[in-house]
Length: 155
Image (tube, rainbow, N blue to C red):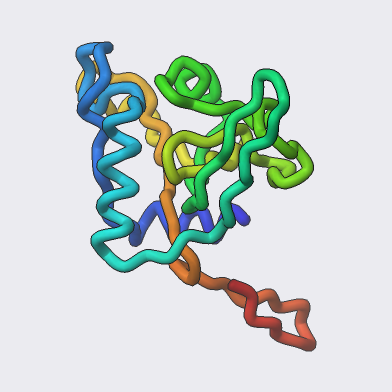
């Protein structure tokens, strides 16, 4: 997994978050930043990976849109939970439809967090850590599993 993370970090194009209020560059992630990312993915003909989760008549839940993956560090969790329109996984109509590492969703991004998520230390204009979030569509990348005898193509 770390090799895949490093490959994405070295080869992915990037969009900085610019709509936050912390005065840094990049800023904290916001709903307008998410909208920009989703529009960029759609404009590049990326396909969503996950189906929508239809709403149900259950207190405190919300429907979840079809989505792309947003792969990120678990250290960004406080920023995610403070973002407008963020839906924590616990508020999905069916929490069994979320992935184990999934923290929640915003617009058409579903955030998967990991302790090995990519971080650029002291990389912001104010020398804060930058949490690199890889937003990917279906078939955006693939890796080959090798055990010394067999190879398996996984996407």
